[in-house]
Image (tube, rainbow, N blue to C red; front, side, top):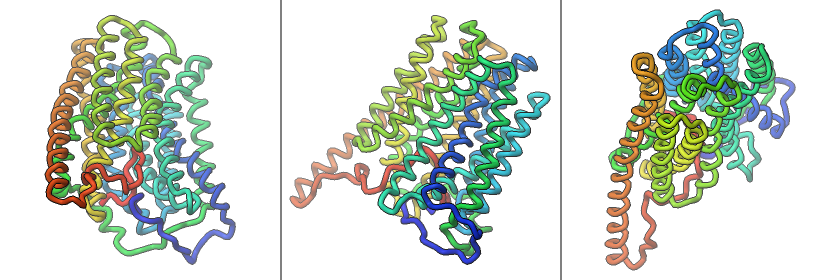
Length: 446
């Protein structure tokens, strides 16, 4: 199911005897969903700890960070619609079992190879669960408060990533057994989450097409191509900056700023997703073209701040740059969805969302792997400078394209208004009849 469709009301014939009330099921699902991203965020400062313990190069650190995106994207593209056909419960239970396996792998990891493998498993688990959870949270929300499910999905993802990094950093700072504490706690939450899912009401019945739904489909309809092309560079830019905040910034705390602090490692991974979570909600009703422009400017200022922090050796400036970049992420990513999706008819939107997330997760994973290789050869600070400069170039391309599109839209509205007095002056790209979507792919990515 997609958030753009009404939830499926169904009463499957084979339900567990004991079913949780919808309110309790919603709370349990929201906590379990958030725990997936707590686990993903926790690795941000922990990877720096692993590097210190096992003495592996920066290239392996960024690889361990980025392979999560590869597993996530593969799962989203192949398993994104599966729960529409087999039900939410089987997909979520399977994904949470995989998540439990990854938690155990991190808990017992003797070397970075285990961590890399665990990150792939974690990415697959999170990707498979995200689409099903996104739908389940909406379906379990009260009938007159369906937007609550959307908000829980959005905050659970970005807030979970940031909070996971911060809590892991605190654990590293305050204890000598941070890895064990974190993944034992997450394993317990995951087990409890499986129980919650098993006892939660199922909202969809089995339907044909499960095997066909596993075939990835990415498509941009003609009507949406100009908006997509204009937004794609800044989408890549903000996701590259997100990769920088999680993949390289914590290492800079130790190697560039010479601070042996788990707390600051965690903080460097916290500020960007936390800021983007808040801004995504605040800007949800702002005119999307204006929000996109503000987001691009914020990403530019944020990248410049990160460069300044790297060149001057100022952690405060770098973290401020990350926070401003988080504003750019929250504003421009939400705006890109609101500008592009209304230009596709309902049955085309899933393919458009898939295309957006292909751009997003390639930008999140591939450049940071390359940056890790360059950091080993040329140093971490110079690599961060050139990496951030690349994000500035991409954002500037989008800024020019957005200004051109905005001018063309205004001209088209003026022409339509002069020829048709009944026109209300609302452009298609400014429609707001589709409810804001979270920074997660909706289910039904086909």
